[in-house]
Image (cartoon, rainbow, N blue to C red; front, side, top):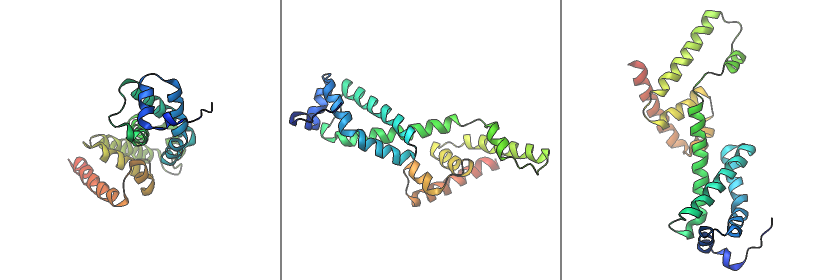
Length: 189
């Protein structure tokens, strides 16, 4: 559906007001106006086109529902609100993934098992891995858990973690250093 952008809907505050009043054409215009830039941002942040498309739908739904119900305090900052909402949805998605990934995937373990090792070494390695994961859950600061899990359990690259967690390389180094110290304290006790 190609909707012509007329002068009265071009203004963000007018667009917000019309959506608040239930104007479906204004909702369609909002989608048309922001869909492309949101999708590009989500693809960049997730590196996964199908995930980005799913998150785009969630983002647009949440934004329209919010604008229908309460609107926003400063309609002139509509673009900032929309992109901020999308960033928060990406962050929430990855946090949810981290919470869900608490169980050992036996298929992955079987694929990565070194067949040259004896059964005792395999069992001890699995127990050690499980122990480390349990210890990670004891970290009080969620950011510490997330960064150490990404780095040591998922073996993600530093830049990938910085991107996913919206950190600079310098901030990453400081956070990892502090998280390691806190983790060491837990393990030693």
